[in-house]
Amino acid sequence: MTSKSFFFFFLIFFICTFSAAEPCGNHRFHEGKTFASCTDLPSLNCSLHWNFRSSSQTVDIAFRQSSVDQNPRWISWAINPHSKGMVGSQALVSFQRDDGTMMAYTSPITSYATQLQQGDLSFPVNGVSSIVDGNEMIIFATLTLPANATTVNHLWQQGPLVDNVPGIHRLSGPNMASTGTLDFLSGKIVVHKTSNRWKILHGVLCILGYCLLMPTGALIARHGKQGVGTTWFKAHVYIQCAAYLMGLGGGIVGVLLWLGVGGNGVRIRGESHEYIGITLLCLGGIQGIIGYFRPHKEDKKRVYFKIFHYTVGYGTIGLSIVNALLGFHIVHLGIKTWPQLLFVVVISLLGTCALILEVLSCWNRTKSAMITEQHRIAALEKN
Image 1 (tube, helix red, strand yellow):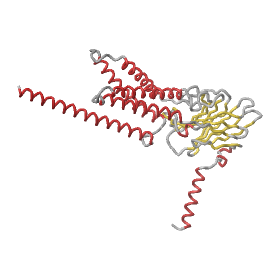
Image 2 (image 1 turned 180 degrees about the horizontal axis):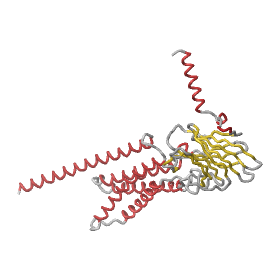
Image 3 (image 1 turned 60 degrees about the vertical axis):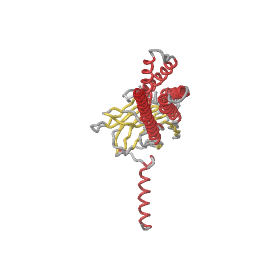
Image 4 (image 1 turned 90 degrees about the vertical axis):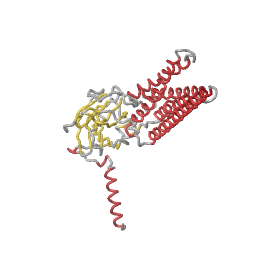
């Protein structure tokens, strides 16, 4: 490639890159609308434009969101007058219906289970409208701020649209980094940084406890009885107790996440995951209590204890693996991401070990039965 050709392609690449990352100040609105201030928000390809009038405490805003994804979506920009979290925020919402018409309205967020229903906000809002301009969706509105208030907590978001109803947005990545503080007077914006440490701690504790230690303890109980003494039993009990305590710790962290602790007020929801998690904690506690008060070996009720113990034990392990996969789905970690891939590999190795041990155990039992039968036949022949 000649130097001129290289320069030409480099120039084209630079122009395309610059155009894709066009600053908000270069944007021109249709119908002659102009805004004195703007800021490029740090996530979700969003920009906010505004005109602030201190004399009347009103602000004209234009919220822009661009996307190359052609799937139906909703967008929203909101102010939370009282906190930094989602609940309590006063939102402007827009989406394009299936018939191509635009829907723009106000929605007060009163719970984490909201479907962004239409309703009045806690402060006056006028002129709410929206348009689609190419790959951009834009919301326009005029807000009246409280007296002497120029700095607000604001949130911006996008999510899927299902049958003209806003669906839940992603619970990871840029969607969890879309809150901040905005000063309409100075234009200063501060992004509220969210941390994934609580979610990581919850996942690590639950997976190590219920999905790794608990199956290991079950394998020891299943195949360790061939050893001498009760070492296998002690190992089984200690490992299962440690597994339950780790799972309990992970469950407590999960409850804190559900309450919105550790994520700047962002509450993590996943109803099936929550219900299964509570069920697992209950089953683990019941299993420990029943195991402590188990009947003696000579007791006729021992057989019922074994059926219950095995059924609940293996059921808990299977349910915990399903719930872990649901947890990966909630935070949008697909099968191609390394945490879930590592999880699948480790669980597969545990399953392979269990299968090999079961085959060996079956072979040993068959071999032992054959030897016993040979001895019995030999004894009969001698007689």
